[in-house]
Amino acid sequence: MSVSATQNAASRDALSAYGKKTIKQGSKSFALASLLFGREMQADAQMLYAWCRHCDDVIDGQSMGEDAPDAEMTAAERQRRLDRLRENTRRSLNGEPVGEPAFDAFAEVAARHHLPKQYPFDLLAGFALDAEEACYETLDDTMRYCYGVAGVVGIMMAILMGVDRDDEETLDRACDLGLAFQLTNICRDIYDDARAGRIYVPAALLGAEGVAADPASLLDETNKERVWRVAISLLDSADDYYASASAGVRRLPPRAAAAVAAARNIYRDIGRRIREGGPDVWRARVAVPGARKAMLAVSGIVTGVPSSLFLKSLKTPPRGALWRRQSMQ
Image (cartoon, rainbow, N blue to C red; front, top):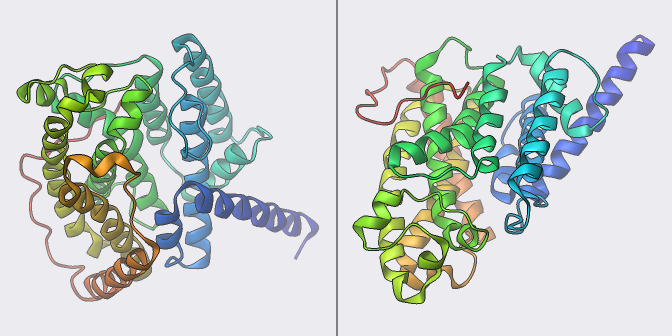
């Protein structure tokens, strides 16, 4: 191996270690699921996650998504941060050094997989909705946000897993999984977001329950049952996207199918806990215990691998009336 090749391998190893550390800190569920990938795919997925996590944290003023978004950050400061993220992302995609591990990791992955530039900038456009303090009047508005911050991540991850960049049908299913994840996130974090001055739940759904679309109304104890019913409505929508995404798992390589099925099972269980926990479920953070995560991951392996090996050629059912993705640019 030449000196240059040795240096490149060492650099990739360092960036891979950074990605692995980030995903372990930022998402235990995704970290567990990613262990089912092969070595190279695992490193790529973790490095892409590290860039996504970094961008999200910068916009929100968070650390690994653990704490609530910084409610004191001004819109002007968020815009300044967004502009910097866009510039560094542009430089990374053009092969220019940035000198920050999140962007160096992203540049490595984007180059290896010829990642279309549209998708990273769609993600940043999703974060821009936070910088602009966007309001979400309808479910369609919320779905557009979900695409920008999560659906597009599903698309990029699918490309890393070997899905052809022109295979729109399979990319749609990958997007659906991201949409389902984000709808689940919105329901899990509904009170944390309200305390930070943010509402991602459609105002129309809240209004149907007699709840005003403002943080004070969401945080009003007398509205907790109404808010819970709105969350259940969103989780019903999430289930439609989980079902659609499940039909696309068989289009992935076996180990990728196992990992995606595992992540789907774990995240969907968060919604189940909200349903079964009732209006008081948010008194503690809604989370899936480690032992159950392991069980759900094993279930993902049991269903994901055979579907990839034996059902790949079957035609996927139509998506029907589900929300259809479109570029944020």
